[in-house]
Length: 26
Image (cartoon, rainbow, N blue to C red; front, side):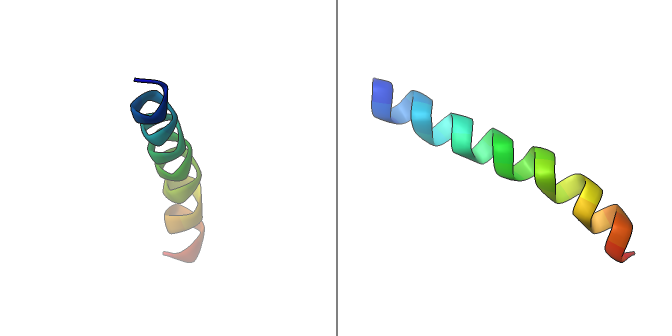
């Protein structure tokens, strides 16, 4: 259960950081 939560946490963090990066690159 903790592994799944950690995976979702990393996924959410990557998405959170990807949006500003994508806007900056566009």
